[in-house]
Length: 426
Image 1 (tube, rainbow, N blue to C red):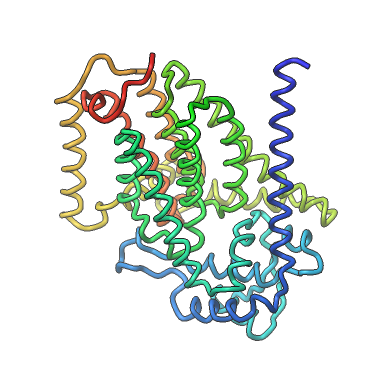
Image 2 (cartoon, rainbow, N blue to C red):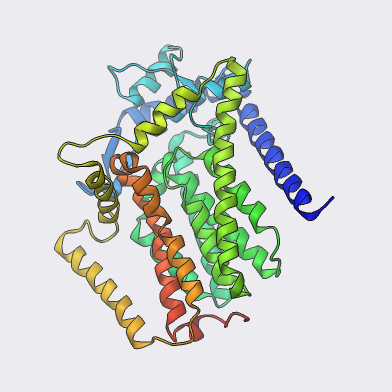
């Protein structure tokens, strides 16, 4: 058997095993007796319905908007799983819906009054229920928010501390600045925001640990599995974070800079393959379980996120406005003239560093590769412009990876590089 055939078999095996394992975990969560989660689901429903579906932590600052609407749907699906038919119920992802009420109230009615599910949400895996449903046995959603905050903080500290101990302060600074400028302190306040942020840091931590052992092989399979786990957990929020945080860190830590382009291309490709095929797998499984083609239904929702109209915008203007709106939420741009001045000063500092400490021997191929990688969130905003415009209050956080890329570019083309990291081996 030649090397190419072995590689294909490795990826197919990795995909099948991962998909089967994730599906099994979700089905096991669906087998948890409904009565076991009743108390904390009811408490969660009361808590969510007591507030606004979309409320601001800081008034009129969209970057601080908290989405209880999606959290209510997620808990509604988790509550309405049929323990007798776990695979069928996880594929259907049904929940109780009444257009006369908002989603937190629908959740409360479903739990308190025993109203049965009448709406399906099968286009996503909703794999985060495999985490949420077991947790509902021991704590309400407020406890889950706190737990997510602790996990997110610990992952961040682990990543930054490890990088600093390795004398890799540039990616440590880039990740920190990206997280600060996209206000991750609000992330744990909504389940919807949490999964990709936590996964991106966990994947970055894994990349750092592997790189410390001087292992260079197997990153492609790692990124494929990361892409699979991303779509399994995510609602289509900041999915590119799980690709770019670990990838950019990997590019910086890579010992052989001549492999930069190959590493970037193969990682982006395998992550994309894992993400896309895992999503398609959900649709195919649903079609098999229900003996019905669900692709037309899914297709209509994809078209909705790509298309859509806003009065006063041409399609091209709408795409540009989606990009502009996401950028406008970056901290501190939303905070009046003082915020704008602070942002301009930050940009001015970056330009000063490049001009003052510019060095001729920097790796141009590395800079180009990182620059193109940092543009991936903008490609996402342009392609899914309707979704990115309407949900900019959370999709903008994908720009944390763009900020990381900018810091890495500055670190590479200036003499500061020699003070912040050991030179990569040529």
